[in-house]
Image 1: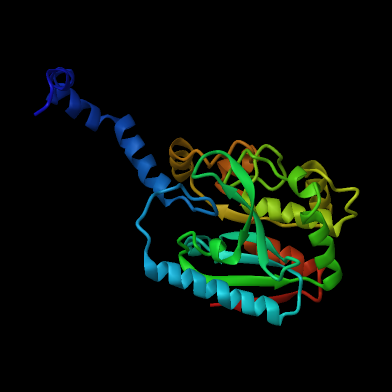
Image 2: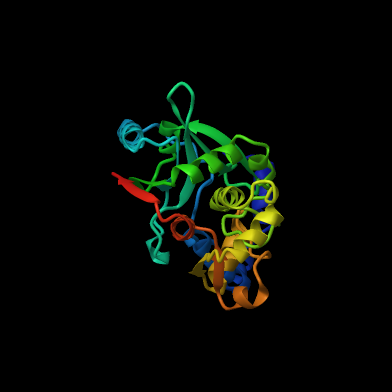
Length: 283
């Protein structure tokens, strides 16, 4: 039975007032924005939602991790780029949502270093995780992409990962759709790309994000362009803390052309710089 306080609160909004609110253009706009907010694409770092453990999904994640481990061992490499299918991005002609750099430790374990969004907030952090954890984030599809660079390039990437530069290239201000040539925000794939930039350039000359982005421009890195209409952008910005568009050029943003770093764009760039690059798909 509701308390007297609750009853008084309920009487403050009369049925006629509710009807007027529901018929108002602002109310309808907000409802549309909510709907569009749920339709916006999701890269790594989706909001934390407590779910009961699904044994089948846990097993599938472990199986993919073991297959990926076998593929890495059989490739006779010490480092690779690894990507997962966290969300269905087919609407944007994309398959993989999130990447990390995986390296072999001295004791033979494979460690993934990647940037992760903190529970749908506007912040991120850098994490070292095992392969199993990498595939336990309730993926849309149990599939992995492994990119194995030329050994010389792999050693350069490894040195960057194990140095302070990898931290200097990280920005905690997270934006799922961060513009590739702005340091205001960063998404997970962007951190991985900027680590690659430091490795491919002279490591001493690329030690921060501004230097990395200057080098990427000169090296002809091309971002992926996502076509996102205004209403969907507004809904995403209003209802998701980890999405912003104010770092994008005004003319591109108003036209609905959102340029951002994706796994596919990083793969294409690495292929253009490494003729010996090997790609392995694990399912």
